[in-house]
Image (tube, rainbow, N blue to C red; front, side, top):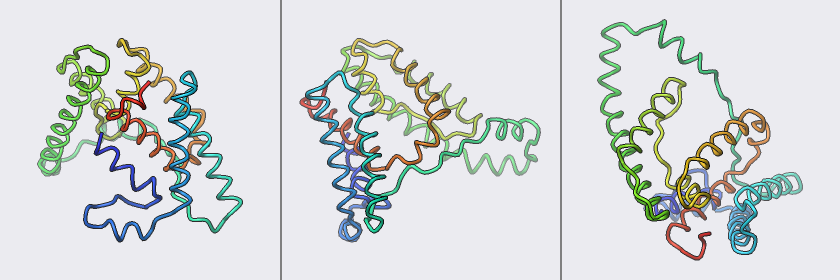
Length: 238
């Protein structure tokens, strides 16, 4: 959770990249007060709704409010320094990746050279993803009071990575933030939050993709920040 909090500091301050331990002074030179105020306001709104209106989807409402505020400031004050937005979400068709894989195999020498280059990195990513999944499973188990079988978690992760690779996607792992959010929604376990999140994600990408490009990165950082803090601070949990 501390790593998640630290990784969100840069977008909360409107900085273009991440903040290294040795580059704090130079990074703070690009500090954007308006973006920081928007991020702090989004965090305060999320915590306020969680505290006083627990039935309201705090993260969703706060992201919508932050997006409207960001676009208003950008239109009313063109000279204001604001952080980036999500931008256009271009999603190629799965066939663009499956067809070359099936019909255009690499020559033997090129295949061996490519495999020798990719295999060490693939093993490293698999190891890091497995460790992250184990930590996430432990955090969810402590949250829900249940015991998760790591073998099942890794099997599901492997199936997801196979599907993601066939569609040209990036390697996936169990996310601590989304897992904790699902545990909040269904404190006694169950797969309903996962299936609901899947359906909402597909519907949002299919129907709301033109609008999602206007969401500021600082709003997403604020949501992740509050989820990470919830792992450490019992007050901010539901």
